[in-house]
Image (cartoon, rainbow, N blue to C red):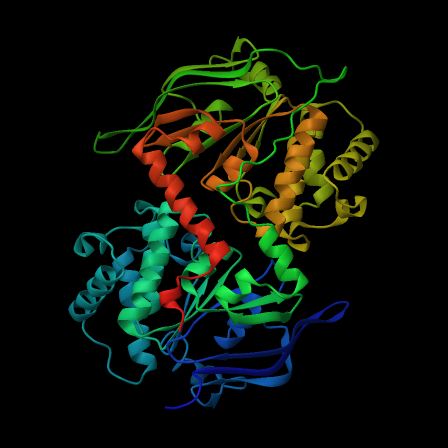
Length: 555
């Protein structure tokens, strides 16, 4: 066939709401040729996911095409019946979804899930369903194709037994099961650490070359887009505001929004000016360590009796008013450490000292009172908030539980907290699904500071946020720290963010600290090979965001 594989022309789509239609996509014009790699970048709410889901025929049920067409391989697919879609979706057009744990069934083995997908594609294609043995052979071939070790063993494993990077590769294998012409990747590297992200991006690049795939990749990570895509489209408020060669857009952005987006990308090689916390009469700074951990260990035992050390002999000291960074790959033990510091997970051994007092033996009311001064901000703001509770109820809940404040006082304090995190007071009547990712994260921060804590433990607080929203949250956290004299333990796999915000940092690997010290010193002259490898992986992504794809990949 000649001509483009995908052609979107003057496409407009509305979504119906109680307040009338919302113009989600506005006059979209986009052409994707065979063998092309196109990146679509933009903030949450820009319409990029709605656009590619329209290409796959899985747009919102309350959506309506107002004008235009989407043509795939010469066929208009905007008005296909569901029966016709079964011959295209997953077979000729396939999608890698964002969160593997959402799209993998925890009750079935990896092998069975891929095998079932193969059977479904064979049935939809009108051919006979192959035998279970033949589908197993094909499944193991797919697992091998995406670079997973020992496919025969993986066939019988469950999703929870795999790492995040391995689960993402399983989703890629599923997407390849129908031998598609067009592969759509929706944020395939979100929340992956830098080394695993690099491996997944390298895998997609290799599959493009080996299988002659056409790829559309959606991401808020400009570095990831630059690594994959020869061409790029920038979306803003339902429109494509700029498109062209990725290298040209990154080096010479024309639209104001693109310029702002690129300016928000943190640079791993740039030392950031850190905002120091200042003492006040209401919250005086104290010299010395606010939090200490002494030889902390957490040992897990399997049903077979095998022991695994998630955290193995960690000792650290966090000074009052500083931002203390914890960095490492997935599985390094950093989240387990964070939860032990707050006694959400009990250590197997070791001691935790807060403000000069051991808290390891605290239980009941003393432990509850201690937690007023130490609060946790979780990675995913959506799952951290109860969808049935209003924002006001969510923020006011710790005040209701921990204090004897009246309902009127709690409401006044809730409004004051919304003001502190720079959200309108009327947000107290809204529900989580009515807020953006950045707004929900601010609500989680407001909830965490409701009781005037002295320490915040932040576990990957920006990993699921857009670049521009991430920059806003980081600036806000620094401002909040200075105003309230807060101390942070800041966990992240994003090394550029760690360098931008943290005063001192520890680097974790397999439950141990392999390097620690002043953040700038670690980045300027890392001592350990592991630290050097992490920084170099982060530098590749940062360099890609500033320079675009390698010249030899642009045709």
